[in-house]
Image (tube, rainbow, N blue to C red; front, side, top):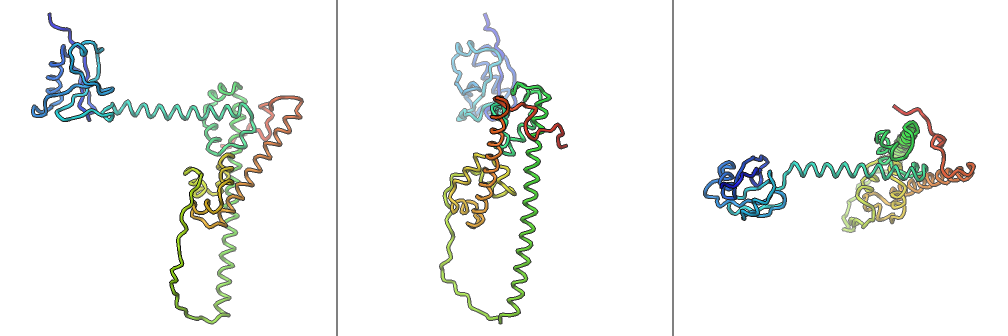
Length: 314
């Protein structure tokens, strides 16, 4: 009595196309693989392996125990199975799923921080604020166990905090441009005055060989923080409070070397970070003080959070 046919899926090691075949034994499956996948006779014998983990299937009894629609990879002579042989579509879906899971976990973690203490809004980075603003209102309401109306007010407040930081950044940029213009103007006037009062003299410049490059110092700051410090205008506004503390603890000379700045500019950055951190902590202390005197309530009412407004910037 002939053995029953088993449905199988076949493909080459580096191929994406799968072929559905039916075979009653391994020999028949190898013959069909050679024909359907166009494997040259000179490259036989063919080895059949499981696509999911590379297990070599060379026993008919084991083959008969496998479920229908098992995926096989046909390896020609001298070919080896590797993890790269896994289905690329499945791998891409897995990576995409991991990214989604990571994003969901992040906003839920931030939401729990707000659920514990609303004043944590002040300590969040701009990126964290934007993450919570982008969360669907119904999802955030479920995580915070609040009504969608109150969550809308909360997201309005987060947007206002984000807008205020952006306005502050733009104001600082304008001030820096103004001061730079004054500095350049003073420098030009000074050079003009010197050219009128000091006789010109040509001097031979001798290279004494004393020039040297300052080796880059080791820093405990992450690449992400360093990139924000170097590229962002008013970077202290976009960092969260923990990152600000790390910048303050960093040695000024090491910070200057890592950013390829002079020491004076690095000191100014640390002062700005110190001022921003002090301001945030003072705001948190003020909120806690208000809370302790608000008729014994453990948490501020969601609708009475200072600065809450139902008008959201469009």
